[in-house]
Structures are given as C-alpha cells and as structure tokens.
Image 1 (cartoon, rainbow, N blue to C red):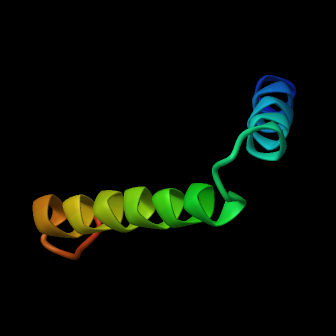
Image 2: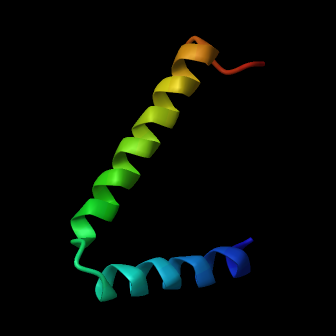
Length: 51
C-alpha cells in the first residue's frame, strides 16, 4: 500500500511547487475533505462502532 501512495504524494508535492497555487490550499482542501468524511461517518454510524 505504501508503495502505491508514495509516488502519488511525490507527484502532488511536485505539482504544488510548480504551480502558482499555494501549498496551503492543498492542506486546506485535505482538511475539508477529511472533516467531511468524518461527519459522514459519524452521521451514518450514529457516532458508535458497528459491532
């Protein structure tokens, strides 16, 4: 799994350095996406594990 993620991370870092978009935008988008996924998990899971 790590061997699949590392090339993608390198590509994202290279794109952030080469473009005019600030790296802060990538971090901000990541935070929004992860927060959204967490909210969906809590809402659909009602905040409890499914055991």
